[in-house]
Image (cartoon, rainbow, N blue to C red; front, top):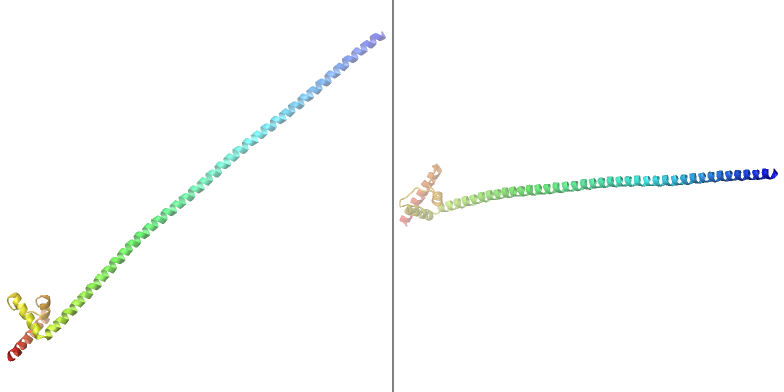
Amino acid sequence: MALVMALVMALVMALVMALVKALVMALVMALVKALVMALVMALVMALVKALVKALVMALVMALVKALVKALVMALVKALVMALVKALVKALVMALVMALVMALVKALVKALVMALVMALVKALVKALVKALVMALDKVIGDSPQLLQFFLLHDGMARGKPRKTTRLGMLMGCPPQGEKQEKEIDRASRKDGQWKQRQQVE
């Protein structure tokens, strides 16, 4: 009985030990499995988080880069348009100024030419008048020249014609009371000169 009891006790102990060992192994395996799963999940979550963060950063960088590029392009375009507008405005102003200067120069030149022509015409007219008056005086003071012009005037037209000294020079008929007085004075001088010639 003692042996049987000993065997039974040994078997019971062996079973208990086996059960305990099995339970411990099961617990250890469960703990290891749980730890491994936790580690794997942690790693997966870390990887996912890193990937998401990387994707978000990439998207943000792409958006920032696109925005910066758009802003730079807009600024460059605005600057180019401003420069082109300024250049066009400057060219238009230069052309307008050149045209205005050319017109002003042409007008000034025309005015100067008109003034010069008017002055030259006035000077020529004054000189001609002075020369005519001088010749008129010379002819009036010289009976020989007066006789020559009177004879030449009569021979050229085939008949005597009343002519003032100025009219003889210019080829114009006498007009007005002054010219008639000149004719009378010239005729008197001519008659006096003829009388002196006859006396001589």
